Image (cartoon, rainbow, N blue to C red; front, top):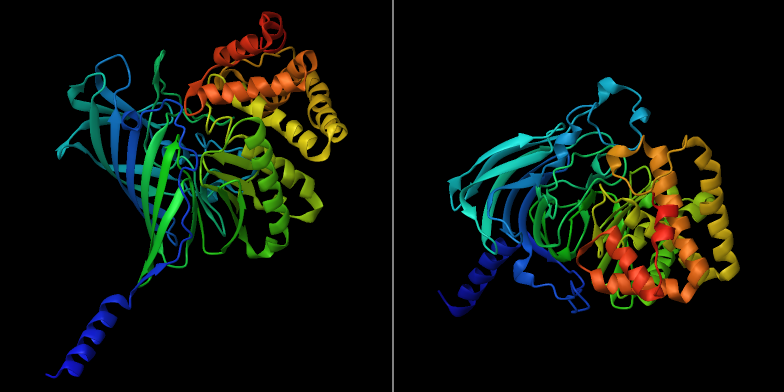
Length: 495
């Protein structure tokens, strides 16, 4: 065989090998754009390595998951607990969605659940049991005790079926939402293990900072929006594989759709990715504008957003929902008739990137802490973008008037500082946690001035970035910055 024939044969072989494999160009972004870890030691964080195969058409997925769990407690652990939130969607009785009454035909409800197949450590299967009133807690018995500072690498395999209600977790006609979709380690704090169920009000989640490497295999025409940073997209035959890195985040969420288009905007080192549906494309410019302005304002006043990507996702969801690095925004808001509401929701969910995402808290026992700060961040945004008068008008109409109207229905129950289980429902929860909580923050501003409030929020962020904070931590910052006793304000507003 002559040289030209050999070259021709090699060309054919290479063509056959690589014709079915294509790596799509992904604009490289840094996962972290600010390297100040605020004292966090990476090796002491839990690590999640997850391989997912998403069957888009059948609304199911399988997962292989390796969790390197670090015992950061002061105890020797004989078992580890995980939340398995998909089980909350097994029945209508446990369904934790905002508008359950809107399900027109309960008989048509398509339930969801997680089926655990293997749980092992070092190739040795571990004993486990599923507990809790809604079967959303997984107890894993370790084969040997885990002492303080040690690590245990737990392997899991599971199958998941998605439910039909389009909420944080579920599928609709055009999108699949994967919020709280994988086994995530429960928090062990000064009160021990936090094993709360998936309450039907609020955001009943409490988690530790962790690092993630997530691989998602699905159909080639499915577009994925996610927490973290999409490192690569590789198409092979009829499948696409996404490789995603998430560093220093306390949760990981996804949205999938065959109809997504993506628009981008850059702001201060962060790439904003707007995932939108074709029929709402006329709102792309406005959505990017609100997202950009929110990041700019909060970067300047609170502290720098440390992630290289922020994804704003138009999806089938009744309102707005925050996860680290990604927010779900109802497609119903992407209309000119409600453009003001679109702006408000994007601002609120973006503020949650600071208050919950970066400064974490127990959203079950102290839900006011992140929600009140996110709600008052709306007023701060309107003041900084549109001026003092607009900021005051926004606060008076959307917060003050809303509370004055709603408080008459609380029947004397007026405490902000309480657990989700103590609220009657969304009505008193919303009025107290969001609205009255924002009034508390505004009174701090009225008493001490705008600049002092900004200093409080900036100090709180910088001291507790990447950690879980408490109400006491926030009040301590207030007292230190103002050099005054906050007990009268705490008694007036929180209790």
